[in-house]
Image 1 (spheres, one colour):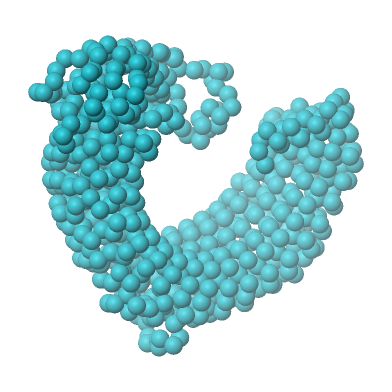
Image 2 (tube, helix red, strand yellow; image 1 turned 90 degrees about the vertical axis):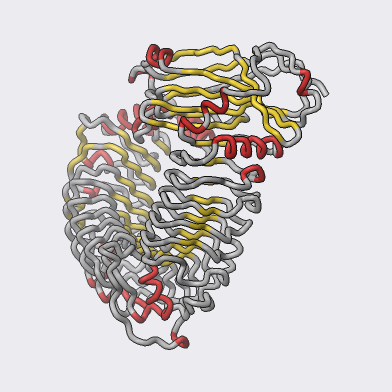
Amino acid sequence: MHDLVRDMGREVVRKEVPTQPEKRSRLTLADDVFDVLKGDKGTEAIETMIIYLQKNVNLNTKVFSKMTRLRLLKILSMNVRGSLKYLSNELRLLYWKNCPLRCISSDLCLGKLVILEIQGDNIEEFQPNLQRFTCLEVLVLALCKKLKRAPNFGGAHSLKKPSLWGCSKLVELPQSIEDLKNLVQLDLGACKNLRALPNSICKLKSLQDLNLRGCYKIKELPANLGKLEQLGLLNAIDTSVSHLPFSCRSLRYLKTLLLPPLLEGYRSVKPIGHLTSSCANLCSLETLRAPYQSLQHLSLLANLDLQTGHGNLSLLKDLDLRYSCFHSLPLNLCHLAQLQVLRLDNCLNLQVIKDLPPCLENLFAVNCPLLESVRDLPPSLKDLLLDDCPLLEDIQDLSGLIGLHYLYFYNCSNLIELQGLENLVELREIDIRNCSTLSSKSWFVNLCKALLQNSNCREWLKMSVSKDMVSKYLCSNNEVAGCSSNYSLALFLKKKGIFIVVEILCFFRQQFLDYKMIGTELIYPDDDMEVRCTVYNLFTEPNKFEEVEELIELHSSSEEKWKDRSILQTCIVYEEEGEVYFIPMNPNVVIKFHPQSTDDEITGMEREQQNEGTCIWDAVCLHPLFRCLGFSD
């Protein structure tokens, strides 16, 4: 629901009885809720209540006893004591964040409740008899870090989605979990002391999603896990699981399989016996994360020939082989016609990437220290990330990758040349920081050509480079020199594309840019300096360029440092007979300074951003404004 529609509805309800909130059906405003609860004015008219009270307000659960028709209760902050038996039997949803109670007592009995979600660091026990919750479908006891024992699931036949995520002291699950006949999702993520899954879990025929991520002490999965006939997702990342049990060959509906990397010296997987291809039914996999060592084991389960690529992985779209131990791709991926994403990060022995599938869109090979060559890139590629590959020297001509959006070669210090940049008309971001062996003229001129060739659809392009790769080249030009901001550029009459490049050197590390404007941004943070090169107002066929005004808005308390340590350089870029020319110019610069805001001035979205850790006030906010006058056909 849109916030405006929600607020309008709340206002309609408020105006029905503006001076007597206890007679309204919905109470959401903090002042009204406080008035009703503190004065014990609850009535049967109240059906919905959202509570956010100050920590110094202490109440007893008896304040709910008169709200006999309460159906939705959402508690975001409330200090309360007493029995939970006073809650309305009509409740359908109970959400309680930061619950201060140590024990959720057995007198909580809500026969019509559908969703129960309670979070609290103090909760040590959960005693309610779930058999009495005959309509309960969702039970979430998330981040109950002191909870040592899971609920007794006996008789909870309606429960479909229990979650014990983040219950870090939980050691085991009860055998009564087998009573959850309608279970669809089971979330045990971040239960880092959970040692094993009970064998009774294999009786849950309707289970579709099983999340074990972060259960570090789980070493093996139940031998009969393959009996979970409807299982579609198995997430065992950040566990100690090294292999799948043989029975998993029966998981014919499994679409997503995520196994942990074998980090400890690339330890080998547990020996396995012979499996005939007739038993291999992992034919629905779309997402597979497993190091190659595990994939060798999976090849038997999925009836996959690793040499030819033929087998039951024809639907695979996302293959994650991170932390694998091989020198080149040991399996033929060309036959995986549906594969769109290939991840090879942290393959420390990988030297060559080639023979890639025809429909691949995303290739990631970050931190492959021995990687030297990347070949056979398909024209469908959109993202190519090869950061931290210091030996990478041979990269194929990029001319055929006309749909490429993101190109990253950070810390590829041995890379000499990038061919075909002028054809990357759809490029949005390029990162070539610390690629100092690249020719500045080669890469920058070719990028400018790409911009000039595709002026109609260009919105923005972000370039991150080392500061020694651009500055000198932009500022020097032997063909044309000296151009003021009001210079009449008759030589542009016959040009099909012209744009402006602005380069700003400053000490700021974090910057936020309004991407609604048309432009190209170049950023490089290096120690306490930063290069920003931005292309603004890409236009065609002008006959006169009269005025450029740049507005820079700063939100920081370091005005003097910025003025002392900043340099602004601007030039016009155009192409003639295949050559790109740069003309230095001096725009009118307006710097608008905003002192750092106090806590009292921070409201709404800004406070929310601060709470989420966003350092917004110590950042630079650049809002360029260019006025180009006198243009005609």
